[in-house]
Image (cartoon, rainbow, N blue to C red; front, side, top):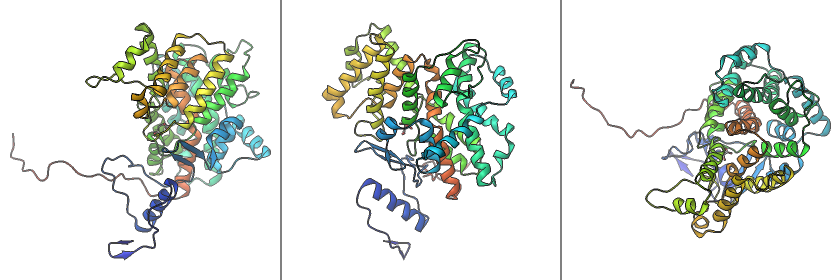
Amino acid sequence: MILDGKTYSFPTIEGTEHEKAIDIAKLRDQTGYVTLDPGYKNTGATKSAITFLDGEEGILRYRGYPIEQLAEQSSFLEVAYLLIYGSLPTQSELDAFSNRVTKHTLVHEDIRKIFSGFPSSTHPMAILSSITCALTGFYPESINPNQTAEQIDLTIVRLLAKMPTIAAWTYKNSIGHPLSYPRNDLDYCANFLYMMFGYPTEKYEVNPVVVRALNKLLILHADHEQNCSTSTVRLVGSSNASLYGSVSAGINALWGPLHGGANQEVIEMLEAIERDGGDTSKFIAKAKDKEDPFRLMGFGHRVYKNFDPRAKIIKKAADEVLQELGVTNSPLLKIAKELEEAALTDQYFVDRKLYPNVDFYSGIIYKALGIPSEMFTVLFALGRLPGWIAQWKEMRENKEPIGRPRQIYVGEQVRDYVGI
Ligand code: MLT
């Protein structure tokens, strides 16, 4: 290939999506050029060795491991280790990692004071991003861009450890309840559920089926290559901003209804259909209306032209959990099943490849677990955390240059100011 008069030993761009992606990354490295992106669609584009996604085939792998296998066989902490450190831990590595995380679950007492300053009406995502950034005040070494590898690792472990505590406290704050301290005899997910629903004065029984379902949900959300929040974390981190500041920015990106906020919108849509009398055929017809289409939330995905592999797993998990919890005749579930049936069989949806996506099912499970809809995105953030950390760490280790999205100027050319 010849560029600017120079010849590059660059293979022709052909082969699988994965091979093409690697070729494009090689071209970028050799030439310093970026791919023209007129729609500003990929301004956070980068190379990465963490998550592979093929939207045509509906394939998702973390560090080469199929998501289906990880969701069935691993714990969330094991997957966090895989994403952050690159390989699955041995049992002793996992034990050591888990012990380190457990040691750091408490947050500084002064963080309680910050919590008490938020009105109970504050959206939990606003609190989550604020407190995550505020951690820099309690661990000032985290803002040092020249941290050693050990210091970076401690910064990472602290964040992983404290996030469930902070996340559960955002909920407690919203209902005006006292905050529960972590219980370090419980594992990562069980401890989070305890801090959400257990009370210091009561013996709280953690249901293992619920814990397993939560592990699975968090694993399925743990990374999804360069989506809006992840590329935000990388972009912010590329200026050498701290991990806590970068993840805080990612939390804000995730909050939006087009990204992580979508599962909250799904439940709100199901509730609106229920309030309207529950006739799904009416809403399916409205969704096909050319003039003023009703937007069915939780259907279709920018990259998947096939079933989102995560949605398939969550759909199965939703059936199992709801059965375990005895939630079989919920009106919301009935509405959801009817919409799902339409999406999978109605030619209109089939032609447009509008499969139910990950957000469609996750909200249904969260609802059955008693998690209020305002907390859904917080759960997404808890799941996505290891992915954000891994992407931030990879970007730093690769010494990526500061991100600076290219723009194509489309405004006026020179104009003479002649006064008002
Ligand atoms: C995600 O998991 O981040 C969402 O599916 C959005 C995306 O990948 O763009």
